[in-house]
Length: 150
Image (cartoon, rainbow, N blue to C red; front, side, top):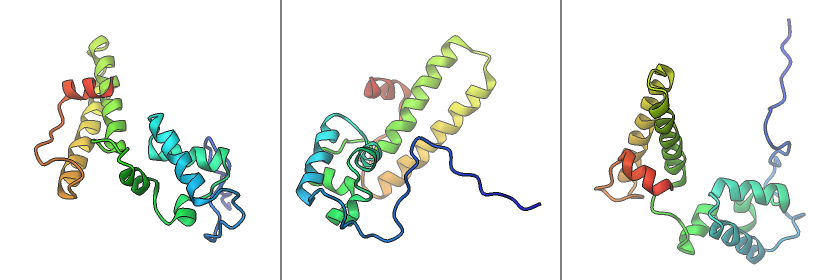
């Protein structure tokens, strides 16, 4: 039997263009940068900003228009957070799982999930220390993570 390729199921139905030709976009470089800064000040992650630009403003790829990534623009404007966004997302998941485990102590599947998430955080910590994106003395602590997220 031949397999049919299933369409990706997700929030958005748009895909990136094959060629990096963004001549049809009606926004200029400065406009796109201002939009990025506006959404960053509303505490959105770079991924969320990229989705918003694509879905609401019709900007397929920021790097094609401006020549820089969203993270580079945020760093230039000093809006970027101390802890990278991907690690913050993992820390949020770990905090939620810890709260769940306080109510459901025998949930072994969630305990394993928490171990996996925390090991990902520790691996990311090693990487970010090596690339000097976070301080050398930074360590993951569940209590501090809870305070950082709230």
